[in-house]
Image (cartoon, rainbow, N blue to C red):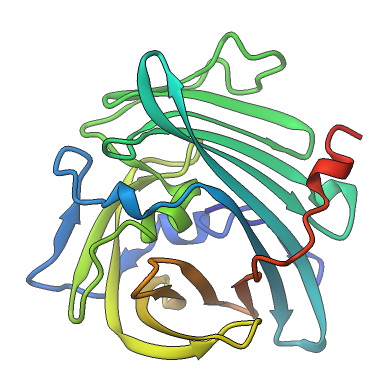
Length: 271
């Protein structure tokens, strides 16, 4: 999932690109591979509706300052070309208009395979038609900067921009290790990313609820530098509750907001 942040004047355009050239540290003998054709994602656990997340960054060299984002991810079930699909709209609000970005992704309900993905970052549109064997720039989308983009696949993959939704559908259990063939549209190539269930933990949410969660962990190393991600997914409701990322120079945290959090989108959309 792409993230743009500024730490001590250095701009990182994509957190996931930090991981693209890194090899997973864990060489596990028994790994459950999540493939599109195997239908191992339980799409019934992905509940339609609006999800809201507070995302913030902390620079180790400036621990008294934080940088914030507020994410809206709204998933609906629709019909497209005669089949049921998940349609997920994203809005990312930051501290200025440059930080604002949008995304829209379409996935089949039967297996969560990607059909379409578009995102607008810094005012530039990137739109793609996504098939099992390739991804191509959508030539019917106005001002699409990726209209000439083409990448062939050796096997079907999942949209890395929707890792949150993917984690909520995974068959998590103690001791499990998974390999997910993710692709971040327009960046690099598809890659099997390793995630390991390292245990469970009861955590408190912002509305003072105690939630028993699986802890899902990813670790990579690139030229001796270590990057980690930990995700807390509720056991009962399969909800993505929070995330903690560690990378050189800082941390990123992502926390799901309570359902009562104010949604400003309908009031200001299109303005």
